[in-house]
Image 1 (cartoon, helix red, strand yellow):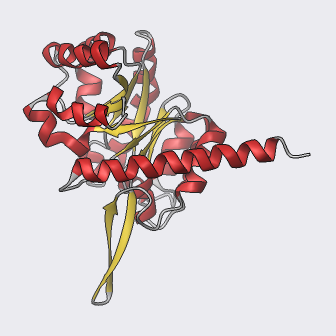
Image 2 (cartoon, one colour):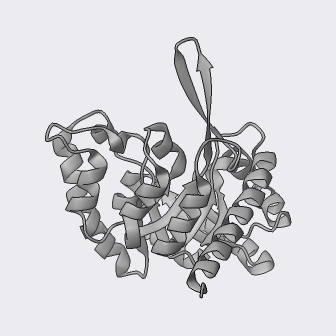
Length: 266
């Protein structure tokens, strides 16, 4: 599993200057990025391409709003081909689904595999990134996540450790459920703070909160996850990325050693 950064984390800097935003990552040894919060124009693609050619940057994937995935395929495909990217990720549920329109939700599900096939014609895989909305129970007693998994066959998934944990679910179990359909993972931790009678959740650098990343990395290795990208809504993004990246390397190495020992035990 390649480790990198979801550029939502550095979105403000990326909007001002793509090169200046990415150079601190490259200096840390981070060469993999999932690009989000960027206009997928030819001009921006060429800026990213120059970093690929000069520094060996690798675009693991791009995260795109649903309406652009469905209605601006030519632009998305061109960006992918110019940057060597083979994975497109739908960023979220359409707002009509989030607001509770179940028919709109099932219409969205019905379009996923068909759209996957259209992108496949261009050599591109299509994935879907979830939030906490997918854990809401529908009128049939099943969650949106259960329906997404059971009623689609080809669409892949990008797992988010924070949103799953915030809903009280075990992130490593969700990785296991996605199985071979797991494209990537958004890696961010969660801290809990009591405020009166409430317990408030906040995202945090990987390894500084309550999420069991050792088990996540082990399960990700078992199912063959392609990449994991650090994502955080941070006021000190590069500092937090550094902490997360160092801890991710430790978790990855620890899991690899444990799996090797188990596979080679006498």
